[in-house]
Length: 384
Ligand code: MRU
Image: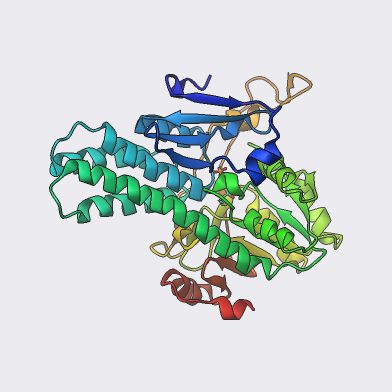
């Protein structure tokens, strides 16, 4: 199991260490970070949480691609940063002595990384940005280009943290003291380099002294909500209860929820949002009950090249993720059963109240206002 990172350095941090100290107060590491002493990429092994906090290190870009595909690292911005560092690793692995050959090796590596997962646009966004840096380099020193690429990956990671905190600040203004919020999937520090998107908003509101209560969608089939979001909320000291995904409609209809928050893996030009499977049903129920629903996204997740959500590629994952559930040690499905496992769905923009970005909250008409946010216009005044 997990054989793809055989040979990599691994660090296990057993639960005897206070996770709260690790994650919040000392924050010994980011979810995705470069180890400058060892010239390796370090990431939290997310598949083992909440049982075990383990750090894995990578010195081969192909292992990074496998880690993205197999969800050691997941969440759109975290995937983007991992791919950027993966390409910096590829540059170091390449034996090219001149800039032209190094660029050719980088192009091959970018294709391998790109294939890891299709829906989160942050992956191709980060790879494009890295390749652009390689192409724009005007010198003739392959060593210098390698350093430049690592610096660009580091910039992508640092910007992600700063952007997330700005989104959190804009979003926290929309949260009222005493709100109960339904949150889908995991959108926290684990899904980004640090802070998070939708969970970052909740964390910021909590830090500002607003009393919030989170109903955590467990988020079948991989349970990112029950496993990761609940774990993060515990570290932050934010009260929460886990609900099965199909309980969301009940809580919305009975008036127990004031806001619905989720992230996005790709937002089309018209504001349609691709996010973790189940988001569409949640947004429908929120809309039907007049509960505001917000998607929280960095502008790097907005893909203006796609006119509407129907054009967003939807990843279909191994049916084993659905069929493998066991209760009391027993499989829950009859042997030989088949399953379908789309990992994302598209929520039409008409169901959204707003899209929270680092440049402020985008309200309808989304087509016009999303383009303004992507251009870097400050939409914050409308938020206040
Ligand atoms: O399949 P995952 O776990 O990578 O999906 C993650 C999500 O859908 C998140 O909600 C999304 O990336 C947006 S928030 C960072």
